[in-house]
Amino acid sequence: MIGILVIVVILALFVMVFAIRGIAIIQQAETMVIERLGKYNRTLSSGVNIIWPIVDKPRQIAWRYVTEGKDGTKIVHTRRINRIDLRETVYDFPRQNVITKDNVVTEINALLYFQITDPVKAVYEIANLPDAIEKLTQTTLRNIIGELDLDETLSSRDTINSKLRAILDEATDKWGVKVNRVELQDINPPRDIRDAMEKQMRAERDKRAAILEAEGSKRAAILEAEGKREAQIRQAEGEKKAKILVAEGAAEARIRTANAEAEAISLVTKAVAESNGNPTNYLIAVRYIDTLKEMVSGKGTKSVYLPYEASGVLSSLGGIKEMLGDKGE
Image 1 (cartoon, rainbow, N blue to C red):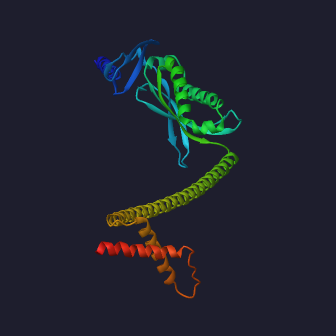
Image 2: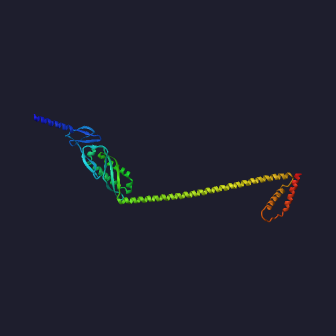
């Protein structure tokens, strides 16, 4: 009786253990590769899954973990796990030295963002997936940097990232891995190279400052010369317009004076002609009288010379007297 009870207890424990180990609960964004008697059987999805504890066994995969020590240094751990994480994973690779095309040793640190898309390939196509990705990234990065000069390396991060991502994505496709992004964290040339680059940068800045200052002085001189020229042109144009206006005023005055004189002569000629007199004698006599008036009105002692034809003036005056006398009668 006791023996039967012991057997029953053992069977009950076996059933309990079998039931507990036969239930596999897979979390979201995780999976598990199951082998039956050493051969691939199926891939478990998230949720509750039933397996046979003795014949079914999960296949383990190597995975990489990074922890931080007490002194702040990063410690890389690799261990084998039976649950595969399907989320995007970030690998922060240690710094490595690469040689550029111009033989400059440069220290580079890279970040890799990848995701497992096919768990079966990730388990069976590569023995150590994290180590393979790390080595592939390092060698590919050396090849890309080896084709670039130091200046191109420092100024072409996006180009390097794109090339590196394309090469890694193509190479890791057979491992069931999708490389989404690659980033270069730091590019550190040697100390002497950095000092030389800083000196060159300061020299370039001083050069650009001197060029800008010279261009500013040149522009200021040009603007000042253009301003003086514009001022002289405007002044000359003003003087020209002023002289033109003065000349036009003088010409207009002379024209009006001539018109008035012509009109006066015409009226005098008409009046003398109506009185049966000689207009020419009258006009000559008037001119002589005006001339004599100017001669005798001068200030100071001056010598006065009478023309030889002064007798003609007297005869003209006599003619005027007769003309006026006849007109009065």
